[in-house]
Length: 242
Image (tube, rainbow, N blue to C red; front, top):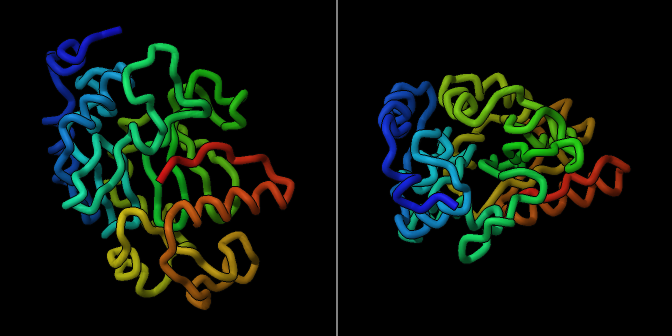
């Protein structure tokens, strides 16, 4: 086990250059203030240093909110006064105290979008967890297909990709007139349920004609997982505790 000071006090910490990347981003972005105690708990259990982008995000910010809340990136946890975005530890069910034997069962959930899309970092054996891609690679649970997709990039590249302006293309066909206002009105514990469901032919033909409402994010994720199983698709597994 590496102690907290070994993880924090490093040469070339990633946070200063990452702040420059975030500031130059092409999408609206909010960096939430961090709960320092929770951030340290995240870092110790992850056993990554502040030299990595994952460690920098966990240690230095409560999370990132992109495109007026459409995408949420988990970090060290924001205080309740700032909306209560949960920490990486809370979302992934970290043990209360450091446990060297504990690992995320399927991969580390690092972000979500309001439609129930989940961004996760593959663990050491993605195939055993039913995930595509290779260890250390980002994957995305797509709410319109109910399947995991390989993103073919690591966590640090993913963060840069998020702010690059490519989200518009990534979510093409899944955004409707007024989506930004609907996303901005949510709390961080809410998502948007769409009917007909996103995986239906009706929704894919005309997303603007769907009806939508704000519901708890756990409900959005639960419905997607239930339908994946009912439709004979692979069980998506762990999608995060929110």
